Image (cartoon, rainbow, N blue to C red; front, side, top):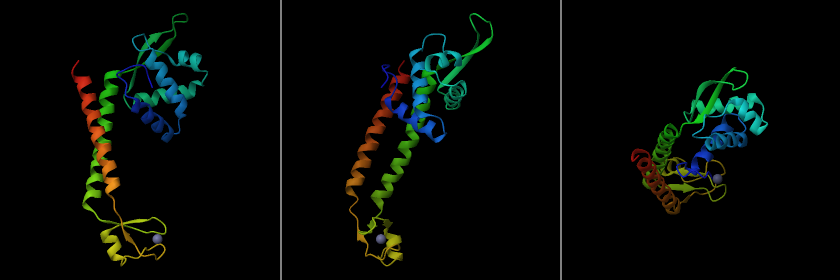
Length: 187
Ligand SMILES: [Zn+2]
């Protein structure tokens, strides 16, 4: 949990799974993200700075920076090393772009959940009491209400608890998106 009030805590979870999916060390990704975030308002951190701060290999650090760049949460500017004069790239987290990008992703998640919710609300499901596999009414009907996997008689499922959870989750997410949008576009 970052101390910066404008950063949503869900972002770190998202970065964590994004990094893991791309084969990048997720803990190192979060560590580098926090270091860049803490240095906001300064000139930014070069990959050498990050190497000195973390002890991670440059190759690993560059992978993380490339990921941040690809998902538009970080930007860099060219500068010179204060002593050697060599070209350096200084990285920082781009807060506004990051938040806009985050809202876009949350909306995509909300879309999927709403689709799921409507599907649950409009469909009668059947479940196998033996192996827990789940079928729509049409699928169950085609199989004469017998589980195609194990032959048990299918039972009608009460999916109300699941629907209630989905309603609650989508309600909260929608509120969160509204809050995010207010905080970005009010300033
Ligand atoms: Zn079964």
